[in-house]
Image 1: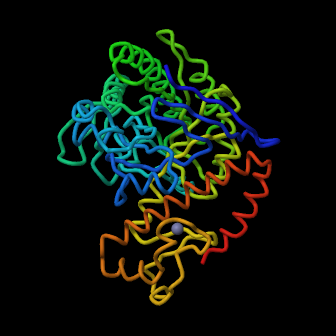
Image 2: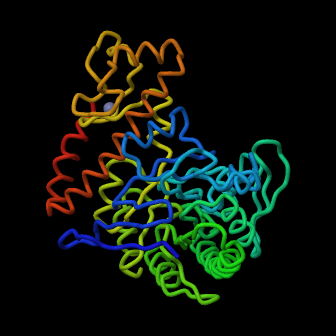
Image 3: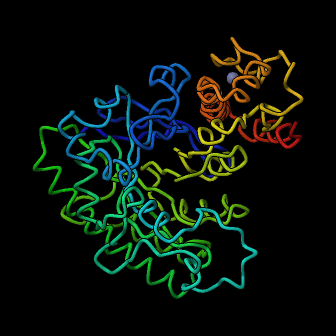
Length: 406
Ligand SMILES: [Zn+2]
């Protein structure tokens, strides 16, 4: 086995820490932001650019790669990294989130004002439900061609072994903040039983595929906004052992009330073993990253920096703005004068404004390079601040300026 995690330093008075994850494809210094390459590509950017801007790993999506091109193709290619020409560590999520979110039609973070929707039946009221959960797994309809498929813990493990990422996730059921507490409890128990099945199948596949590099399996904690459920999930998965193995790390997932993000991460981290890494799934906005890091999350992924880049929304030290807006037509300064990415070193807001207005492909490419660099670098600066003992000062200084959006 060549997977390990070592804590380097800690934030005084908080759960946050810096550390190093070691995988068969190299190390990840944490905390770290992991850019998303859903279909084995970080959209609009060359792998070389993603490496140059400082990314230490990428995260692809088991659901999307299962449907297209199929996990057999990635297996035959020698695994995800080889297939996409990315020589550093890789992650895949379990497919559970996409199976269920594309199926039942809800967003990851739902506002808490929808009290009238507090029923399990109303979530997919206005559209056809494309996913059906039972105790054994999930049956779902492909969003590509409408064909029917089934994911279970065993199938998710097989697919993720074929894809071959260094860090893979247990198959879990995603719930929303609108599900009733009773449903959250049932779902959490289902996810717990699925976690045991994931460990068993992962052990079997690891033994039978010894020609492949070791893959680390992370258990996924659900429990929505409930303290008792979040703590139970963390305790159950943190202590879980089956087929003689335990989880290599943990993913904190599911519906999160963003105003309580740090508190919810803190509940989970309280109960989890200190010597294993924790990944906060689907979180990437600056204030959320600070909350996650402070409360003990080690790695993060999110489609926001890349997705927003393709719509011309870009980050700067003073806030996020839309570079295709009229006021940037003749603004010859870089997106962020403090940024040292390839885009900011070589191009102006006026040029990006022109590219987006003319619908040129280079617009999304340059904006993606900047946004991914901005977020990767922000978390890297958090790591350096933890090691220098001034994380809280850095947080207050950054967020103090970032709130004053342009
Ligand atoms: Zn830049």
